[in-house]
Length: 193
Image 1 (tube, rainbow, N blue to C red):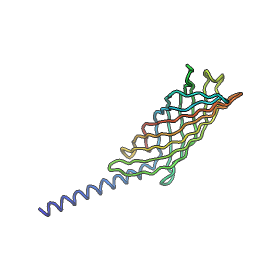
Image 2: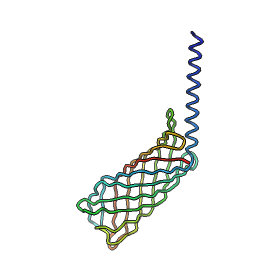
Image 3: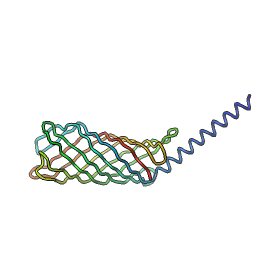
Image 4: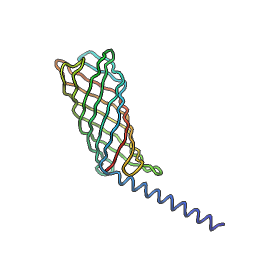
């Protein structure tokens, strides 16, 4: 009976060591190029035009991001996003394209058969705002953002992500610049190559 109990305990320890080694391998192999695609839900926030301001209605956007880990903790990459903004009281939606680099930090943690990879990302890039009720022409501007989130890796190369943060734009118009800012909730899928 003692031998059976000892054999069962050794088998459990060996299985636990195998799972731990596989999880460690997964964290190490997720150091490849990461490509993610998902939805962005923006809420709260306001738009400022000169000294006037108005509330922004909730909005939806699409985004694609690409990041390469540098060492164990740094992420460098970029993002492309299509966002829609609606000013409270206006019928028309404003559409924006944002493109720019991003930099951040991450730290992968093995949790059983999954890897959780928390991150923080800062973006700074360009915005193209398309003509609408507020804009007479298509205008250029800058795009800034800060996100806190996590990737949840199911396999060596497939996972899901979610993040929350702030997204802002400054659109250069004549005679007054337009600035917007909203909180954003992002989620989607992520691949590692």
